Image 1 (cartoon, one colour):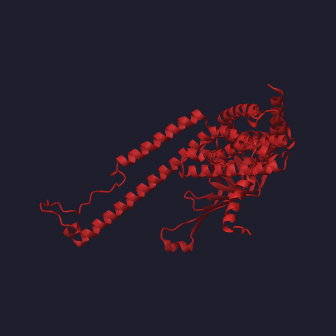
Image 2: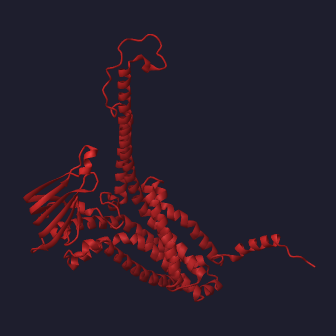
Image 3: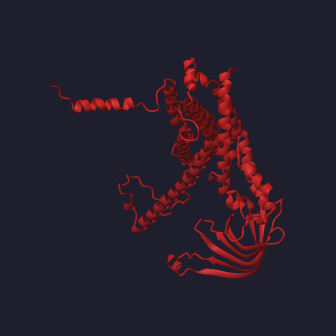
Length: 478
């Protein structure tokens, strides 16, 4: 390794490490903010908080790593250009590509490490993170409920005025709103003077024992005109036990994705196996539906049609062969069949669409493990030429450019993934959309930096305007 390569690598590594640590700390604070409701006011000791954050940290790396490479590249090459070190290199016959050679090798190694990290460490951390949150509530069930606020626990919203006892399992002033199974709000309210929490480490069920309380439930009448009366049922109890499934606690994460979608916890091999199973399942369901058209209709053969054999040709208006009563019955049966068939088709369409969305999420998770590799290259070949062009180091202008570029990259990436999840575009295009759009920009910057062309060639913009003005307003000669 030559002295120049050592110098460039040392400079880049120093800047990259500093930037990575700072950005990682900022994103950790964001994670704490997102999970503040789970950490604050629940008597968690320092060891549990550290474990909680340690399992949440790996998911931050795919965001921090490309941004750190981009900012470090701009700052490193910007400092070299600002201090005329690049000018000295070029006067010695060393081009920009030669200066970037050793750093490119480093980025290749870093990208390989990022791939193995995304494929092995992040899925394992996701698994540990979800199970750790579940185990906290099992070992210390009182942690699932904080004082003075409604806590979303499974199908219940629970509020307690005060917790007491050694483990905080004794509750006072309990109000519970039970969620509706069909998603039309809370129609059941339970109030109790006191109660207690009982759990076992071997079970995922949390028992809530209520004492001396009342039970209110809104009743929805079948007749629409009776709904304005708003009837309800009320009863009292001395003791009531509610069983809560603690697995419902795991339905919130940093990326606003349900834990039931386990794509973030799978490696490439596991994703390939899961995708194969999901595709076979959806193909089988479509085939079964199309091969059995009469099974989805499910109506009895009508008995109103005449049994006499008609040898002559049927008239154009077949209904004219029947009486008015028979016509009415035939039309009712036809209308019912159409309604049932339409409902059946819409139901299976909705199920297939949901399954396709699940497949899309798994495909996006599969492609993401390769996108992070290319993102490292992309950000380096945007940052290094850009730093050489703007000729500014430090934390001023480089941060502005880095933030603007990364926000653009992240916005396009998020937009593409969301659109692909909803089947608006292919998962491959959705996952690679930001890389596809910014790759020409990286090529353009590298070309301009290599040929010592500024970021914007003002002559190329102003010269056509000047020629147009001369044609429109020619100067008169004496």
